[in-house]
Image 1: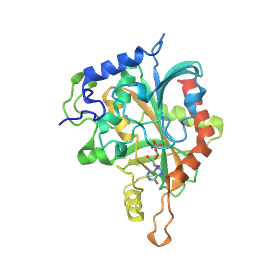
Image 2: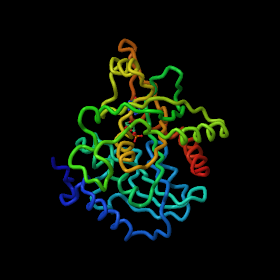
Image 3: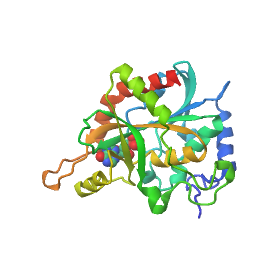
Image 4: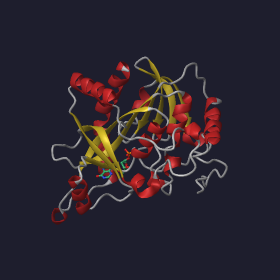
Length: 292
Ligand SMILES: O=P(O)(O)O[C@@H]1C[C@H](O)[C@@H](CO)O1
């Protein structure tokens, strides 16, 4: 199976040497005096966090070979190194959504493999999601306890294809995907900051269409709490390469379950809600980084 990237026909996201070459190319554009032990993937609403870093070194995705363009409004498209709460970190300001890139999940998760090479041991990942759990309100935060990775279950795992053992094991356990001790830490921070922090199961669909009411009901029946179109491919790769993960969703809309009283959801609504939750989410993540 070829996973070569159309725009960069010499880069293969499942080729370990290609990943190393890209990492070295990035290294040549920055001055790294230490390894970033913490990585952050900023989903919708968390992008401003990358602006809070001090001594920032910013590399636009367009300067990174093998990186496709990010087309989703609300995602800036920068790799940012810098300090947050006294810790040196690397931040992905924007991400690749599989629906933008022909469901090439290995490509979309490639930044996680790069983070591992930079030295990342802990990854904080966020997303915008539609709430299914009836206790959730617009603007709430939900810690991800577990995931339903629909593209992965359907054969679109980022781990499909030849597995170079330098990437990690062929078969990866997802039983402890969202680290328990990190979740406990997140609850402590939320409590200190007076933030509502639910916990639940995140579903990743292929998108880009939002779910129909019948699909929302189906997901609710199987235990879903929040619905989105990202994150699970990144978490899967992180677990393969031994990075521990903390994930959370900004609940930007309430997923409608009744066709007769249809409630439209739009990307604009998602962005407005994500922007509203941004300050709270940035403070939450900063509080977690401080305690890591
Ligand atoms: O990167 P995220 O997951 O925050 O992106 C949001 C959620 C959906 O993927 C997409 C459509 O609203 O944008």
